[in-house]
Image (cartoon, rainbow, N blue to C red; front, side, top):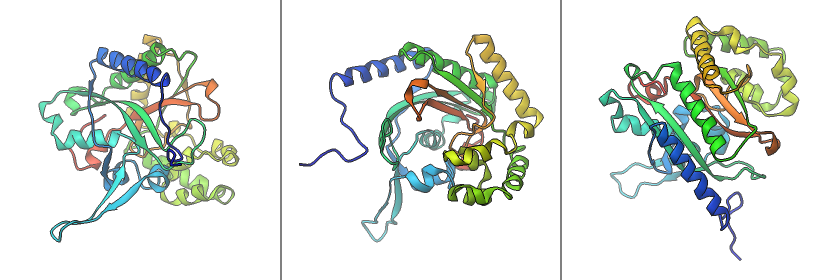
Amino acid sequence: MIKAVRGTRDLLPPDTETWNRVDATVRDVFERYNFHEIRTPIFEDTALFARSVGEETDIVSKEMFTWEDKARAQSEKSQSLTLRPENTAGVVRAYIEHKLGQSGALQKLYYIGPQFRRERPQKGRYRQFFQIGAEVIGPPASGSESPARDAEIIEMLATLLEEVGLKGWTLFINSVGDANCRPAYNEALRQALVSVKERMCADCQRRTETNPLRVLDCKVPEDQPIIDQLPKIGDYLDDACKAHFVAVRAMLDKVGVPYTVNPRMVRGLDYYTRTTFEFTHGELGAQSAVLGGGRYDGLSEALDGPTAPG
């Protein structure tokens, strides 16, 4: 008997009724905040994810479903394609390709759809999973750099969780700096890792040389006491990044969204700058994250697009 591929699942009634209710609530909340839906292809050029998400991230190095789309005529070239493991990169690619920044307006976009990662199937984690996302991107003159954008996204997501009935969540936030101050932190991290890397997992030993910030994203339990003793990125933020983070926190305080600063949280993608955040829930077990994200100033430029903080 042919069965669903391991790591995938069928959604059957009455579960589909719950999913439809969540989708409807998402659309209602996001449209209330003036977000509009975007739909991008479920597969993209592999280079899009390698250049944006980062070669040393687990997603790119271990988890992507990639294949060679062979040329069908002598005039064509073969192309490496990948099922999307996340959707921010695809949205930014569409923003650049369709010149959405030319109007000068802030683009507030959301999506609902499947993503794909070659992870080890386990409870609550599938190789085809469904993700809801929201993106704010635009030229600097549109206000895209403002800490108000960070706070707005976080407040909107807190509202969403409450309205779908998920109570008792915890919000963690951090700042991971930017291209101006992060190099100094990376160097401090690299130096601190020299004397301890041999006691860490093979991935961390490799990342010490290639991308030391990714060490902080390690999930190996035995490595956590070592990571806890490493330098904190908050001690290396420049004045602009410090001021941005202070402003985000002040706005969250003003609108009554509770949070905890987690100085170790960097999230698993290289494109994040400044604010990162994660909502967790204690009843989900070890995989406690419900949703997360962060600012990605510089991603558009990394994909040969215009300056467009997001």
